[in-house]
Length: 336
Image (cartoon, rainbow, N blue to C red):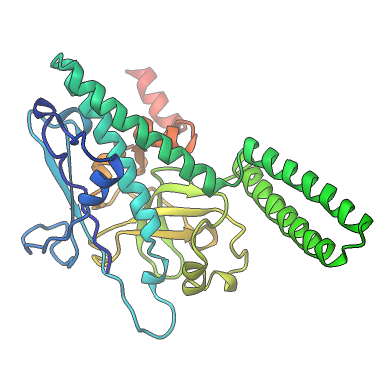
């Protein structure tokens, strides 16, 4: 069972949030605490594992108060065959929580500036910078080598080849064999990382942020909140989810999706291959409940999909989705 809790900062902006005697990572880790479900919250009444994350007023549009977002998931284990829980992802959920953490820090910085508490704002800004740098490092690791890393590998290969040539000239064939293996492994790693980085640059997705989808196998309704051009999960997750049995395998887009808690209260965030998702034939304007919705999206558009906040679009470098103009609506507008 997974339990993550993103709770308030150690103090409000007035008191100097996020204590300066520990790193932001320690602050983030300290917020991951489990508390029992009360059973009275409609959105999570059947969840046995809860999460809480409060946001400042202007982050989610509340007035002079903070809102606690709570949700949970329960892993199913020991069952034969594949069920929806196999696609649950700890890393996907923590990626979302880290995104919330960034949003909250940025909001607190602005709040402190509005109150002209510049020392506190600077402390928070320093924390935010550390978090942003860590997120960038994680993204680079996830997406493959950066240009500098690729250059470092190329330089290493050149040096190893020079050492190989010297070993051959000295007739040190044992060393030469070892160097050949190192070069071969390094070239394979470099090629795989470059291919992954290229996949991110040229990625094409069938679904967009905020779009409502349905799982082809398990049938639940969900909303897309993140995407990768290839599977970025661990080997153990890939094996448990039986990705190797898919027609397109792991080399296809994978999506972080929020599952409607009223359809399956035991699911929260799943990581789903593109071939397992389908868009509804008709606009889905039915109610959709999930505790992250009000944080990641502005609201629902006229087609029933959700409008991602600017920061979410920037995270995945996705453009705004413009709804096509309905000729009938345009005609009515002209007549008016």
